[in-house]
Length: 116
Length: 113
Image (cartoon, rainbow over all chains, first blue to last red; front, side, top):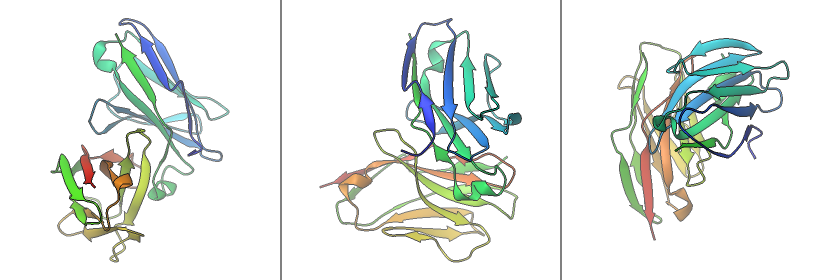
């Protein structure tokens, strides 16, 4: 157990629907990152939050949004889903997004999203 | 923008032998960190080894070591005495302070008994 909790582990939904993925960071970590991993590909950075504030954006579609709550858990909202959104979505956390990241991120086990 | 390139989509090694996975990166930064992550079939991302760019000494973690060539922007991973449990996807990653982590496309390692 890495200490980063992602729910649900698996999600199957239809095109056009909306889903919410949840992430609880490791205790004491203030920064949360979301990544998307399509089949047999590398991880693509989506968005970062630090202590409740959006810190950086990557290749995140306008149909996707995220937020980090006062208790530091984060949610990634995916709407108007398309077949191509099927992927593994990872959440990672670090204590200090700037210097603490040199020890690498702690990843959750991911949410497998299948859009049918 | 920083990019990470893994030129070997697949590699194979015999159990107990040594294998080297390649990684190159492009950056204009002088201060950064490099990582190798392992992703077994469970899909969990596991940190294998990390290297600070300012350190000349190559990092080592048990059977895993790196060959860090800063001028060449190369960061290869050597796995010695390969074991069946080493079979996985391996991702090279780059991170500079104040920025997110960037990953290569991965190398799938097969270990033959």
